[in-house]
Image (cartoon, rainbow, N blue to C red):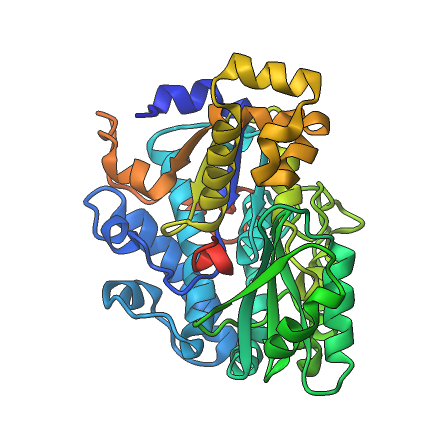
Length: 420
């Protein structure tokens, strides 16, 4: 098991990965909430988030009670789930920093899928919890209502790279038929994209996709309903414009996040004092570029990824699939490197996209050697430091000075593995 000493020693080559929305969003939060040492810290964080959520949706919310009741996720609970995800991500990081004294602010980078990117920005000090959390909460009801007529499809190939321009052209043509909007909401890997479509648009995509994508392509439907963030469907409720108004009315002066945040909107470290608001506006209706972020993470020399949030699945599962693919292609290391060096790709045909990327993206070969920590599991399995006392950190109580400090309150496809 990775120890506290291990985390501390390698913190400068560690990335924090924040999960997003899923069909299940509680994970082991109840165990953390009811823990004899952690409970007071977790509850203080949840109470603070509950207060913000209650004010935005004009209804009294008690996230601690919500977690203890084990409420199941539904479209009606979308605001609760957003608040729970952000609250528990910040609480988990508070525990790691305050109880175990791991210097997580020295991490090399952070990134988050969907809602997780907002948590990363709050943790990094660019925005206060009070200023940024209301943005998704304000749009939550509209997103939930749009989900009623929305279906998620997983578009993928068995070998070839799925070109984003082909996917987007296909979706534009089907949307142009006037029977509902459809668009990509995420690119999970070079050969996998998620589509969100209204009405019969997924069926229509299936009928014509061979005309737009030259290689054999398949479409698998997901049975769950998903709020259509990161897709053009939200244009119908003017969500990008409303988000822009909220962000540009913020009175605070933005600072670059520390640690650096890789954005799923661009695949790069695009959040800075000038551009962050614009990136977040695009966050509402642009697809999540998970693969680009993973590629950048591997290229950066990261050695450990800490997965933050309640039972994180998508990012961890994507790394696991990539690791399995790389190991499968390597066979034994010497033979693989020999094949790669001579350019004999015939043995790699099963995963053609991986074959093409490996010569130019040699960082992929590092995947099997990166360690992964599921933070909520780690917290519940670790022996507590002998000096631990049950106390609420002052930064949790105070919401005035320095949200930079208060931000310590805080990381086919499956469910969040197909959305998030």
